[in-house]
Image (cartoon, rainbow, N blue to C red; front, side):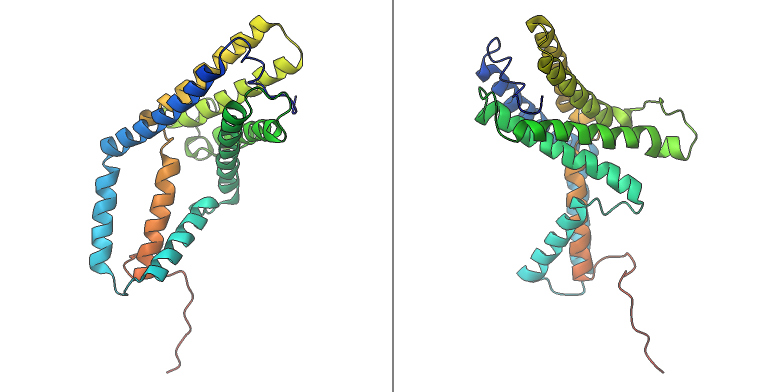
Length: 250
């Protein structure tokens, strides 16, 4: 299972160009959906106003080196989900985030670079690993770590609009693994194509639902982290300084 390209099995029936076009269309759907989400929520206006306030409140000059350092610190914080204080929430989000990154990169490689390769190196294993990481982090978060479940006493199976992204992401990963597993069992071509179609359907829902789900938060969080680090570096932040200060003797 971990050594056979799942997409190579359907290219005999579905043209490779059609599968590649689907991936390109999903990328455009994410870009357009994010722009619509930014416009609807006024996020661009919010960030512009925040930058203006930070510039007016700055107490230290910001040269290129200081700005670059702040940007690197902000991206580093976002890369480890530093906004979460509790290790379990951080770990579940990291599993989903890096699982999704592996899943997307491996998909692009299998569809564009190695569409007809029967044994395309480590990319299939990374595709499966990414999907498993998504399922592990997503199930952990959905059933145990959601605020309404962990603190408000709601049922683990209560579903709200805020859960749309996690559920569709898990659905795409689960169906991808199921489709790949059925291929490994040498199932009929009809069952293989049926599962492939269902997998594409859930994947399309994931990317087309960007304006209504929390998909775009993966772009907002790095932007917020970078802006916060810039404010801290310029002295414009209204948050308490986490750095301990030495006591001065009287």
